[in-house]
Amino acid sequence: MGFALSDMQVTSTAFQNRGAIPAKHTGEGEDVSPALAWSGDPDGTRAFAVICHDPDAPLVKPGNYGFVHWVLYNLPASTTSLDEGTGEGTAGANDFGGTGYGGPMPPEGHDVHHYFFWVMALDQELNLEPGLTMWQLLEKVEPHLLGMNRLVGTYRRD
Image 1 (cartoon, helix red, strand yellow):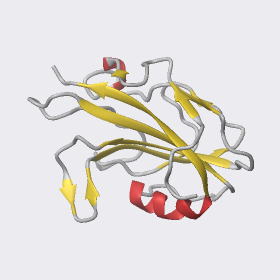
Image 2 (cartoon, one colour):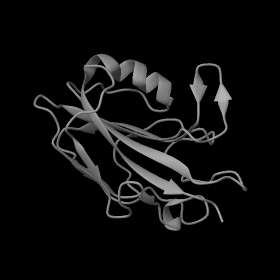
Image 3 (cartoon, one colour):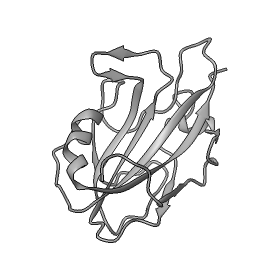
Image 4 (cartoon, helix red, strand yellow):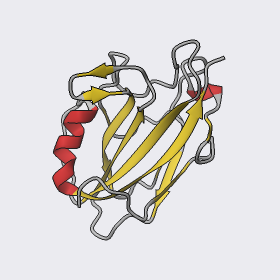
């Protein structure tokens, strides 16, 4: 299928699509991941992966742009939501230099940044090792991708 939008729907109780992400879920607050839920996954889904990426961040490296806030995978097909501050799945590497969720924290003086919370439906459980970068994960899941969609949140540092 490749990386194209599907009919999946991704929502959060913390913010609406294109709405402001509450400070609680940012580096200026408690820095906990927001609750997410999804529906409409394609037939044959056996696992999910989640990524949060900020393409507005002024970070450009060879083959990379923006800032990765969250990489989460090895979520079974029975998972249709993640609680706030979830400990489910396997944590990948973020661009803060750690693993797990790291909330929005645009550089001072920047305008609004957009945070894309991607949910990907996969045709099999891959049992991937911890600590994968976003790009490593995308390379491994692309042949198994059945569908994907995103929820976009915004944040501007005061």
